[in-house]
Length: 272
Length: 259
Image 1 (cartoon, each protein chain N blue to C red):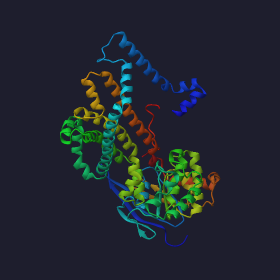
Image 2 (spheres, each protein chain N blue to C red):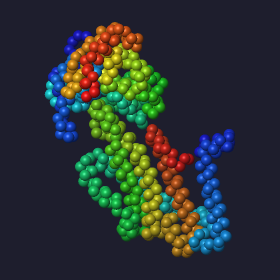
Image 3 (cartoon, helix red, strand yellow):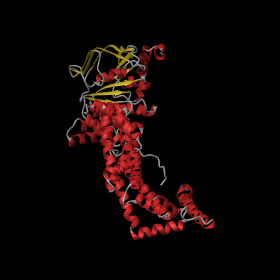
Image 4 (cartoon, chains in turn cyan, purple):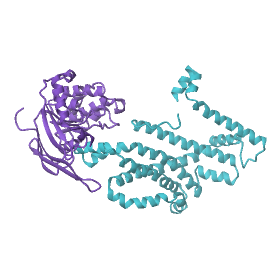
C-alpha cells in the first residue's frame, strides 16, 4: 500500500496502470452505492426491503456515536477471539498428537470425521441450553466451528514433511522431540496458518450463530432486534460492521503470517 | 597413509523385498577398505547399488550380511563421526545459512561457542563468508550445496559421504565445485567417499575409483589414479587423464547402460 501511495505522488498515471485494482475496487464501490441510492429514490422502494445507502449511513454513524454498536461489536469480537484461541490451541495440540501417533490417529479419527460432518450450527441450541444465554455459550460455539479447519490443516501439515529432511535428522541421531521441534513443526506452519486463517473467520460465524439462537448482546443479537422492528437500515449497518470485523481479523492473520512463515509466502490474493 | 583403514567393508550383501514381494539383490559381496584421508569415488550406472552402499556405510539402512566397520567398530546405526551430503542440499528454509550449518551441533548438543566458531570457519572454507544471515531461498543451487557441505563438517566427522552432490548443478558450476571440493579436502584433511555418475568427475577427484557393476551391485575393479596433486581443471585435458577415463569407460559395456 505505501509503495502505491509513493508511486501515486511520483507518477500517478503509471501507478494506476501498474495496480489498477487499487483504484477500480473503490470506484466500483462508489458507483454501486450511488446507483443503489438513485434506484431506491427513483422507484420508491420501501425501506424494509432495501433501505437507501444514506439511511444505512445515518444508522451506522448514529449507532457508533451513541456507543451502541461499539458495545455489541466488542462483545462479538471477544466471543470470536476467545473461541478462536481455544480452537487454535486445541486444534494444534490434538493435531500434533494425531500426527505423531498411529495409535491415536486410528482411534480418534473416525470420531473426528463424524463430528466434522455434523453441522455445528445444529448443535448451537443445545449449547445454549447447556451454557446459558451469556457469552460463554457463544465462545463454545465459535470454538467448535473454528476447531476443525485448524485440526485438519495441522494434521496434513505435520504429515507432509519431505522424507529427505527426516532422513537428515535420522543421520544425526535426533530423537523424536528434536525432529518435531526442529523440522516437522516449522515445516507444518504454512499449513497451520492456512487453517488459522479460515478458523478466525469461522469463529466470527460461530459467534453470530450463537447470538441468533439465544443471546442478550452482540452484533447477531442486534440484527435480530432490528429485524423484529423492521429497522432494515440498521441491519445493513450491522452487516457492514460484521464485514469490517471479518476483514480486520483476516488482515491481522495475514500480517502475522507474513512475519512468521517468511520463507513460504503465498501469492497475494487480494493484491493489497 | 599407514595404520588400520578408516572404513572396512567385508563381503557386504544387501537384499530387500519390494512392495510386490519380489526379492531384490541390491549388493553382492562388496569388500573395500578406505584409508584415513583418502578421497575415493564410486562410479556406476543407475541401479548398481552405490546409494545403497552409501546408506549402509552411513548406518541409515541395515546390511543383510557381511561386515562394515568404521574406526574398527561395527556400524549399526547413524554415527556422529560421519557427515553426509545428499544430492539435494536439504536445507531448512526457515533457518539462515549459519543456523543451517549449526543444525548438527544443535542436535548433537555440542558446546555453543565452539560450534559457532567452527561453523563460521566452515562457511569461510566453502567460500560463503558474508552470507551467514541469508536464507536458502536467497542462494543459488551451488551455494546451497556448499552450505550443505559446511553443515556436514560442523560436528567434525572423520568421514564425509557424498552422494552425487553436484548432480543437480549445471556443468560449469559442477566443474568449479569439483575444484572447490579438492581444496576443502586438502584443507580439512577428511576422508571422503564420493558417489557419482560421471566418469571424468570420478577420475578428477579420486585417489582411487571404485567401479561398480549392477544387479547385484558388485565391485568390478578399483582403479588407482596416480595423477599428481594439487589438480586443477587443466589436468582433464592431459593424456593420462584420458587413459584413466577410457579404461573406466570400457569397464561398462553399452548393454549394461541400456538395461
